Length: 195
Image (tube, rainbow, N blue to C red; front, top):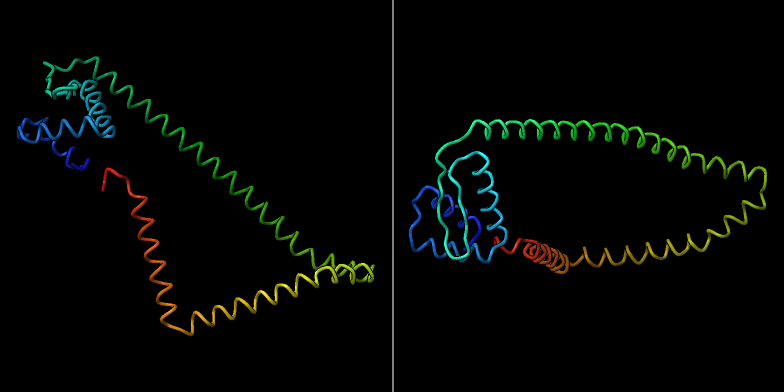
């Protein structure tokens, strides 16, 4: 049984419209599924808080219990709790907005400093070249091996890309493999209760 079916049957049970054959299957599902059992417990807590019909799940059977009336105290407590929750949510929203504002300021300052630093490197190298020509040549000779390795790596990548794009069958196979891997990943990431 899927969880969404169990929730539909729970609703039917609350209304007194659940068939007896389904009640046993529902009870077995609730015994095995912690998520649905927690859902039932939460519904029972809400029903108790508002004084409407409540659903109690026992180990052997599920039965409906309907309280006689709703007290004014229960309604006032529920209203107070709602106000507290609303106040807490508003407080969280304001805190988040202030954090975002601080992050924007810090991000803008960081971006400006980074841009200034990166743009000053060529100027620094130019000044170093003018003042210390020998030091500039030694620095460039250090990068010579890195530049050569980058060129060789670029040639290998270009050859590989040419091979892949020239043969449409190979490119189609590669695309198919990517799609299959994505499908497997999505299948593995699904919740086991939805399967």
